[in-house]
Length: 128
Image (cartoon, rainbow, N blue to C red; front, top):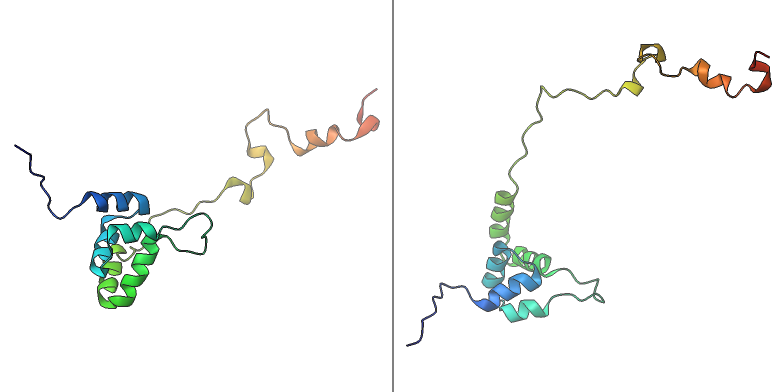
């Protein structure tokens, strides 16, 4: 006796189209509403020589926005929730090189500007 396949609306061809075209479930649903078959989506994949051609996901989304503008607006609003306000407690970053910090405040053992100029003075700075 043969085993019956459980098919709840998902087909292996759609799985292949999802992988080949790099689609997510939302874009696949849009393609189904537009009447695309998995095979026709796979034919729309641009090759290296077709750099002018948009990726399949962008192509499907553009067509969906043209045909169903009100549904597309709802999907866009759901996908991009409003951004929250930045925190008022966030501190501003002030790097030490922008402040009026002198070399004298650094730990001992660090060269100062006077030490750096001694090496460029030539023979006149030598004690002998």
